[in-house]
Image 1 (cartoon, rainbow, N blue to C red):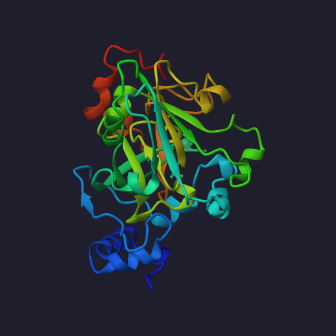
Image 2: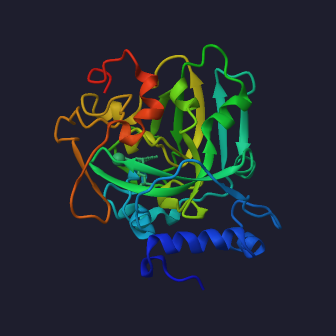
Length: 304
Ligand SMILES: Nc1nc2c(c(=O)[nH]1)N[C@H]1C(S)=C(S)[C@@H](COP(=O)(O)O)O[C@H]1N2
Ligand SMILES: [Mo]
């Protein structure tokens, strides 16, 4: 039996899980994670990526027990307590709209469409907490280029699962379900934008958006839609669930920006989960060097 993650340091857990994945674990993994993979197949090899951070990883326990996933309730501990009702098999993702080759992908095919990478990213929530997570996935661009976007594909819309039987939080009109998010096409094609299947060396826990989500590390966490069933390439900016709920509070861009406060609280600082003292929030969540150029000439106060 592996040691319980809560009992040892995040780094040790991470390394143990990684070694397990890379070592003799292959056949065993197929037995442990049969949901996605047909008999005899194993979780693809994962290669280390250039996206690393010299920061302490947020403990596995915090990453998987302190979540926002309103489909399972609005408290941070609701998703871990209630997401078991989500059925991730079978699962397909329809990629459609302004593309030459629309296609409904099975999750097992998506898992192996491109080499899986282990990328350590910061993710900062609009509610001013943040975490550092070793995610597993590959650039969303890998998927998008395969469906051949047309010249009219200016934006990408992500639609999460809508099924009140599996997602009890959808009985309440806190958001206009299904959860919808969106990116501009150049943001979606940026190599940092990760189509995500796992974390800490394992398949995504349900509360983190199994079986497939995006992670857009320079934007507030709500842009990173979970449990996606549809990806639409569109000409007009999609109206997102959070923009419908509070247009003055949640903008389309939602780039992490310490200089532009949320109307009800400051965005200058954040609390890293597990830490006591707050840290300064960095422009673009620390990814300015890679992504600031996407917004040159734009007023980031207006386009919040
Ligand atoms: N479908 C869906 N995706 C979602 C959310 C949600 O409520 N529903 N919450 C968002 C918010 S506000 C955050 S901060 C991140 C949290 O991701 P994590 O729980 O893996 O940390 O997921 C985002 N994706
Ligand atoms: Mo968030």
